[in-house]
Image 1 (cartoon, rainbow, N blue to C red):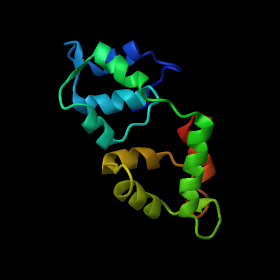
Image 2: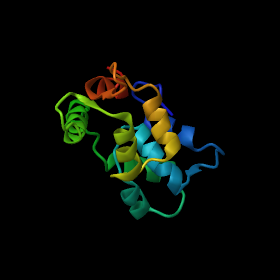
Image 3: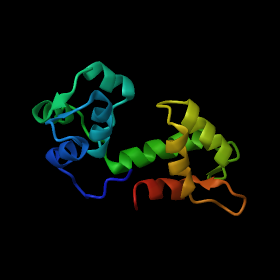
Length: 141
């Protein structure tokens, strides 16, 4: 899922995730909605916030409590994270290794989410993921 609006408002995002138009989004949708706004809560943080559906006013209050890291800061953090797995200092990481990391470390992604990330990942002639290009792709730069 890629949100195509350049700078979506909290109202736009809330309405998108309020699929049944009942004026509330579920706790499960809350994390995705916050991330659509560029916020970076962990699943644990989202679970700690509420176990009940939230209204737009509550969502607006919750979303304003999270700062959005700059793209440059996020890109730098990702580069540093990839570098940990780049033992040969080649700027690349084998796809199976990245798949393992995404599926088993940090905020664990499902196989479907990992597949979606890796399907368009830029690869070198050896089939390894070029992480500088991957980061640029993730940030649409």
